[in-house]
Image 1 (cartoon, rainbow over the protein chains, first blue to last red):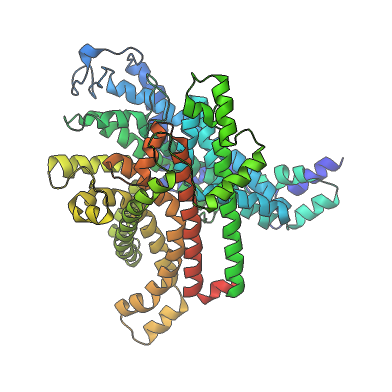
Image 2 (image 1 turned 60 degrees about the vertical axis):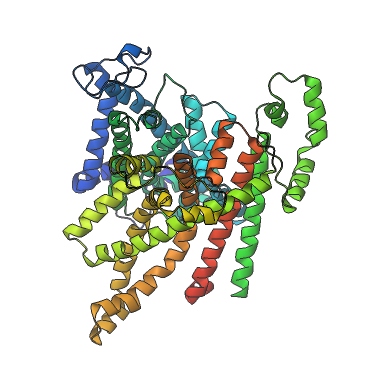
Length: 301
Length: 316
């Protein structure tokens, strides 16, 4: 009997307008209003279609090498030429894009999830718990993410799931800080006092009240996290610490192309490089648009 | 001010201690422990046990941490597995070169970003603002190594204007003597920071333009240029000090990639080579030094901020 009452309190801050549309609605409304965000969303849609549906229109063999076809310039049959091992570069771009997008999305979302819970707990508990938890993030943030990533990736040979875990284990720090700030502001709200008076515990406060109320911040941060995670995948591949061949991602395609800059094999460099720029810029545009929609203050360190 | 200083220093010390714990934990995450990393997978269990006893790895973890910390405090970072040299002496060789690269990149970024940000704020909503915003968005999304590659292709190979390899010299002076070879690495490291700084400066200048003191200055008949230089820019530049501190990790990550790309003989290249050869003492030594530099950098930035803007001291 007490539960519906609690939920009614948790449905929204008492000082807010009675019928606030849900986060999905507001995100959708933001997309239709904000042209930049819409452009970002469309570009992302196109890139996902390219990577996951593209192979249906342009089927290629991305497992077996074909040295007879190696190093061809763009032309009939190979619109973007072939790699040094004879893979069709257009097909490779789709195939590698899957890794980049899958790992980037999964790692970015996992990092957001971990960081949200950690930050909400720290902010809600306050006091020494908060102090201890936040000093730990301070210490981990002091070491640049890329250095931590390289150390961890050297310790463990990455596969896709491992890569996701590695990146998430480093990237959760900034959402943790951000959500902690939100939680700190939310914990002294009247509806949380009311919940405590009715006997609600810490777990309920964090998951039913603080996290749902910080959903705008979480959602906006998630888009930036995914963009960052895609860049991290690329950096790790560039440094030679990503999924081993014949698997590929946009970063490893690019670093494979570096060897052939001297002989002018531009098609090995510009397509994967531009793909990374495009996907990261699109996620950032989307995040910017959502930030306006949710009226979230820019992240500060 | 004394209280602010004391509080901030204690905080930095605690974080430094935690950084050392983190690096220590990473050291002990090694698969099979450091013994396997040095002696190889073929080593007999006896050899591993002997090595562990010799190095003190068979003692309890807290005990090991205390002796690790003790060695750190005397500047002993261990020996490289591969380079037959102490990690401390390797770092002493490489750190000044990375500091040079990072310093030049930061200086270039600031020199370019300030006028760009001001221009965008003054031309808000016009074509120049939109164009520069778009460029900043793309620059922000461009991985450092792709940018470096494009610069090498254009300036190193097509136009043959600049060398595509960084200076190869033993001393900082020797590196500076080959200035043309420094251009591409420094520009590559700077561009991402330019994008971030100019975005920041644009909004800071816009915020300050809306302040009352700007209206007062206008009412007194001051010229726009004078208002910008004497009032707006001064206030907008203060938080840039903190931003510099916050960007140190980004800057270090950038130099890691730039150094391995252009074969620049700094700490990043050392780190990258150590990663390729599983040289863990070097990897962890560099990680520790970068962490400490970041903590000290943000401490300095905060102190500079407090010195420049008295309001901060009472707030924090």
